[in-house]
Amino acid sequence: MKQILKFFRVPPTDRYLLVKSAFLLGVIRLGLSLFPLKRLLGLVGSVKHELTEVSSADNISSNRIAWAVEVASRYVPFATCLTRALVVQMLFTKEGYPAHLCIGVAKSKEDRLEAHAWVESEGRIVIGGLKDISRFNLLPPLEGERP
Picture 1 (cartoon, helix red, strand yellow):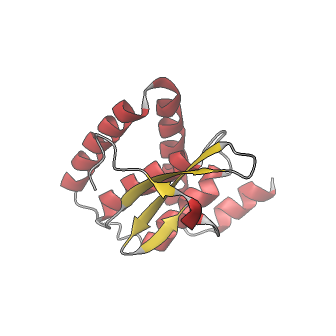
Picture 2 (cartoon, one colour):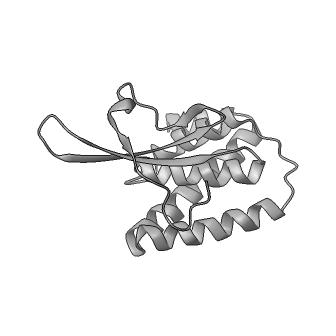
């Protein structure tokens, strides 16, 4: 109940952004479970291309986009770092902000392979930042992803 009250206390533009983020997180999450990553990136790439054709009158700040995706992801089951990164990349593209999807891999202390995704824009990490992000080896861009 507290979350619902909090939701209605935020400005209408933020509410809209939260709902849009939650919807996209759900769609991308579902897509990740149904399609191979390369295929999903191709689909997301074509959607991003279409989104840039639409002029946006919203002028949403990049910080608000990252905030909305981070908050909405708490309420979308299994919204992983990759899910959040793909949604931020889509929304940044729509708003005209540069966004580069980064996927890295590293070995954990237990000698297991770990992967992490984040988005960089204008030299800074906008979502998915970790204290030890430098330990991840960046993978080359995948097909369908436009750097």
